[in-house]
Image (cartoon, rainbow, N blue to C red):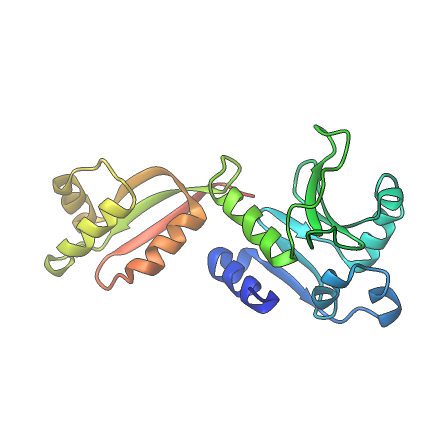
Length: 211
């Protein structure tokens, strides 16, 4: 997967919650970062995601000059919203691996690299976030029932694993809105709605926890 493909996937998953700051870092700074990060920093200044952020090259250089990163040959290019730093080896190991994350609150030592590329690491962390309790949650409601919408109602109810009966769903949605699910992963819900491509009914998401 290329960098552009990776960011396109993240854009599709998280929409406006991906905050990219575009720009080209100076060549004299680019040579200070690992080669596997230079493509990113030649196109972007930084990037904020629901599960963490890629730091600016200046912030990364500053952090990487501190211990234990400097003596162990790591470049610190990002971090999550808790205690983990995102790291890239200045030179890949014998297996071509360069990237890992380090929870400095739980782990005294930094583990060996686990990922070959930035794209592979971001996709792994995104998948992990999507299935974690840290993810943004929402309430799912349905409105706009009509005769032609019955098939869509069945599909929506099944997709969100709702226990609301079809009778209750039909009655409430035809008069206003019906709460389909009280707690659901916000970004998974957005993807479900997009995949269903609904024409008759409206599904509304209300965030109950922000990232």
